[in-house]
Length: 153
Image (cartoon, rainbow, N blue to C red; front, side):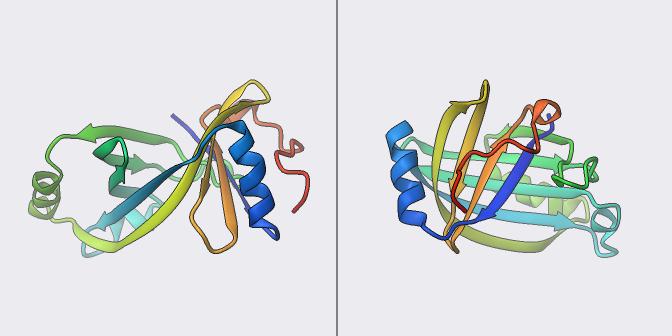
C-alpha cells in the first residue's frame, strides 16, 4: 500500500474540530512508536523505516510492524508501506534486537482521529496537537494536489 499524507498548519483548531465532529465522532488513541535501525543506520541511509507501533483506544490495544520503503513521490513524501498486525509486541521487540536492530527513536503521542469519505476516497484525519493536522488516504495515485479538504488554513 502507498499512502498520501498531507499536513497543514491549523490556525483555528476549534473550528476544524467542530467541522470534523459533524462528519462523525472522533476517537482518541494513544500511539507508542519505536523506530529501529542497525548500528550503521543502514535503513535510514536508504530512506527506509522499520517501526513497531502500539495503539491504545477505547476499542482495545493493537500492535503493528511497519516497513516503509524510500520516498517515491517527493511532493507528498509518499512511501510504499507494508504492515502486519503483531500478537506479541514484546516478543517482536526482542526479535528485532536479536537480529541486530536497535531502537533509533521511540515516542508516544495522543491523537484524535476522524475517518470519513471525501472526494470518493476513505480519509483518516489525525490531530495530535501542535496545531497541525494530517489527512491520509491510501489511494495516492488518484489524489489531486489541487483538492482542498479544509478551505481555511
